[in-house]
Image 1: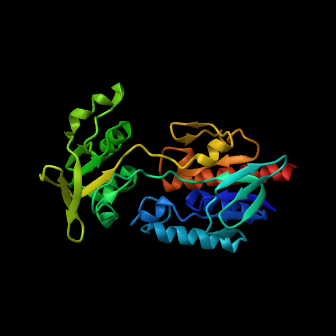
Image 2: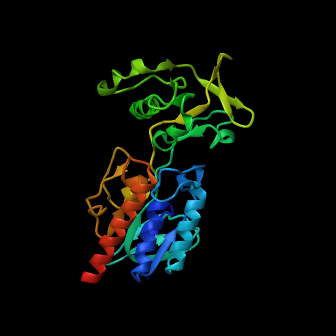
Length: 290
């Protein structure tokens, strides 16, 4: 029996684990291996760290959590079954029971089916303009997407890139009235993309008609589809792909908290860490008051 089970081992989940374990709570982290932070080649805007890869930052977080006594298991949570005073979490291998649950399941980035996409991840392909726009100073970049999220990412890139192309990849552009006025800032290309090309790094895209567009960066900005099945089954409120929480990351469902990318739209390490700490502190206070 655990005091708390944390589902997800990204920056939010691991920060929560560090605080819970350090407070002497029996803590289990279920790690599906899907943290988006692994794909961050270089992080320069996190407090106190000049330059680190996302993968290395995650490893440091895991070591810290383990040092304080948290358990980390490489298993994916498949089901959370509530009972009167606890929750049963089922994986493909085991069952675990806890009084509290923290959902830190992240938000999966939707990927278009384009040849060589994975080949150029961290070599010109990015999934977060706020994270990586700085690295494309004075360069030409494209944003693949056709909804509000893509326009917002493109607007962020305008502060850094010399040119920003909005690539709908054959989809009809669907943008809300509030963002339509910004479309004049971009060249919009509606043709379907078949592949990406380059040698060591991304050099451009190839369209269905054979035409090429030279760019040094591509930002994937399809509407994020968060893996929130577990949350919805528990009755947790989800709006626009985001778990709704209060100021303490409480979901409104007894002893269920949520933090990180699944509970906000920022996609920032610092925000995720802060929310993980906030959820942990709320649980620590609650257990001590009991």
